[in-house]
Length: 395
Image 1: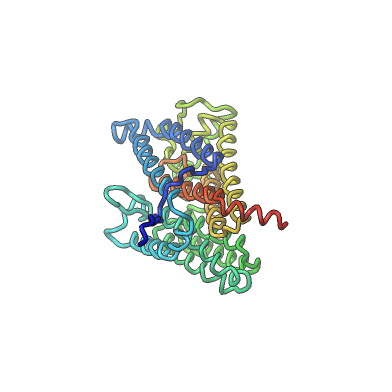
Image 2 (image 1 turned 90 degrees about the vertical axis):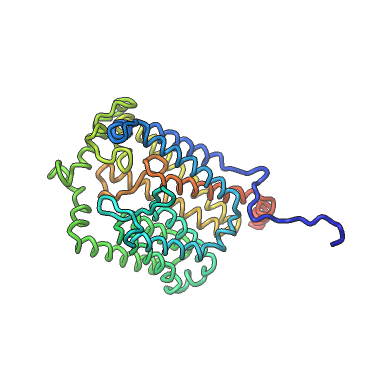
């Protein structure tokens, strides 16, 4: 050494001035805080009866929010290229975790499904972190094998085989909704990433055929998938949950019955604080409030797509594909949950992001938001800005 100070580059460095997307932050906080209010309203009666504490679910949700914000802050520290390098090991870990949850004594079962594991007393739904790992994997694959995806069916098929294994493990839990969202998100990423239309359509048809065959060969799944078409034919059995949801939405009319005044949450509507929290919201805030919530979700998804487009314009392709995948997932899961609540889709057991009670889902949603904020931050680095400006001048 010559005596000169040596600079040590740490892998995770808190940005001195993080460039946060104010629109994403504002939309997420609005949905998150609004979700806490409606969760309190939807869960107080059930929590009082089950735990003698009306704020039981709210307190647990607040704890999840705290962990989620810590996770989001961590994601803001980690450069995007770190996740690109780790995408391979992470997808292997995700597949192992999805397999382990099916091992007797490891996975936790509830209501006929085995989807959870207990980690230090905290129940985690494995599909939530696995989904993020698989999105990172598909994004990394699209960067590494762009030519193969664009020109050969084999290039398209390889990542879909990995996704198919993950979907099969999800179906074995069973978690039909998570499997559907995962396959649809991956197909969308590959299609936007340049996959040929015929390859996309061929695999989409095969996937739909496999799902249809699975449903037809299972009387339970077939009854669940078709029961939403005529819920009033059996309103006290197979159609009970949906009919109660439709009653709640109908009672809301234009402006709702008022915060806390829902009747359906009083032990009529099952899962009022989880999968069907939107029905309680619609009852208390009416059509106007429901449209406002839908507009917030739509604005958030569109903003994420804008972020993806900006990353692509700056040649940050991994970041662009990750943002695309997260935007598709967020929009698709929100749309499915709303469709289920309104009787437009069969019950899938999917939460409404940032609104429904579900700690692992909420934590991973906030972690994903932190990743999006990191992507936005890196777009404002001097080298990236200079590259974008040079590219615009060449145009």
